[in-house]
Length: 568
Image 1 (spheres, rainbow, N blue to C red):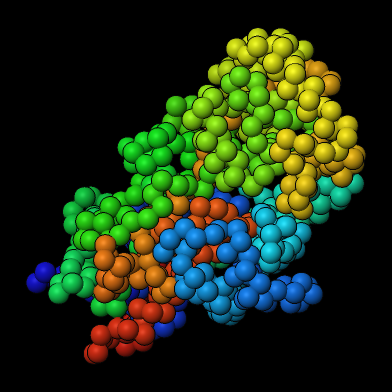
Image 2 (image 1 turned 90 degrees about the vertical axis):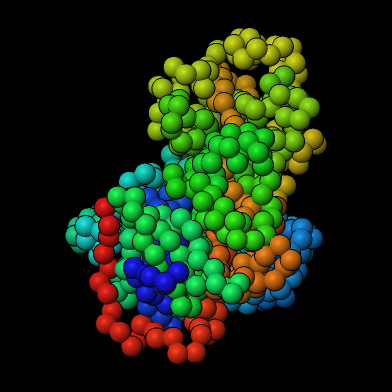
């Protein structure tokens, strides 16, 4: 291409955790960096997520006296993931784990305030190398620092809009039924009031992550263009040397890129055609609207290799009563006692307290032989009175009107309303109640691990995850295979370089986050297994691009820094 509209060293497509981390690392290395966001709001799916990062052997663990090491983390990853191909190669796993302390300290130096989720277990803590306390998150962030730019984020799309931490959720969910839950709820109230009295606008969870990172991007003077999607890559002599994007008015902008393009634009969770093709369902995703797979498609068109396209970060969700609404992800609601999940015939088929991805896989597998989409979470009155049920708080009346939530005074009447054989559902619940009384789930082992018991009620004995369904009225809530995003995408190496169909790196092209095939393979080792690799490989991509820039390339240190701006 002989004429360029813009000239930069590093171009980043996407403004979630992967993209912002790449942009920060690139600017820190002296590269003049440009960030493109396809939608009119920055933050991506990270912004509306729980905001946790699974960071084994991170520096906070040592401060808390929690022993961990690279070897232990790699042992655990092998046990949890197994051998699933090059997306989760030994080299990529090692690069991820070994870079954790480096990227932790790098972002900390730039102002990120980390805090440990010290009670959050790995999702398979009983496996070799499993631990409790590898999760971290960002302290609730004063979003007033971002001024009007904060209103361009996705923070108002997530609930609650308070300084909630990931490590609060498990206790706040039972704030009115256990002393520990009440205590944590009180701390959240005081934290909220304290921020208000000090004139701060504190946001937690995913908003804290993206706002904290965006504040650094703004301080570095990196330009951020909203409503400017990447539409193509420019290749010369088998190397990516530029890109084409679309301005808000639809006109093209041609961008010369001297060091590297980093694709961090999310997966394809909201691309119904691809979801049907690769997953066999149209999808019930909680991902952001821009998660359409465009970056994956663009890279594939120049020869990039794809992997794990048939998988996602699955989890049970309550479908929206609105045709265009987002499904509502379910966590503790299905794990707390006094509830169970059944298929359309009224049979249990999995451990309700298992990690969300395992639960999602189980639902999809069950559906191959018995209709299980939707399934039904059935709870009795103690569950409804004691534990937070987030989807019902968001729109209980609409859910009932849509038939997504049903209620009946007896199990037999509920079965009739759900189209099930009353005798079969009664037999399922009687068997489950016998497990609750003995404390052992002989069918699926619910309540066996520390992860199962993370979302439980310690007052319920002998098993804090099992409580009998005895007291009506009984409520049934429809569950579908939702997700936090897709797992498949571009195949990358340990330095986040995109690989072609022969396994060789495409010069000048990098990718991170859900645009890539996950280093976590087909499972979810611990809390924040999406965001942590996004941050780590976004960082590694920028570092590699900076260290391999062509001779004679000017850097951001040679030029006047641009002000962060927006289009549209």
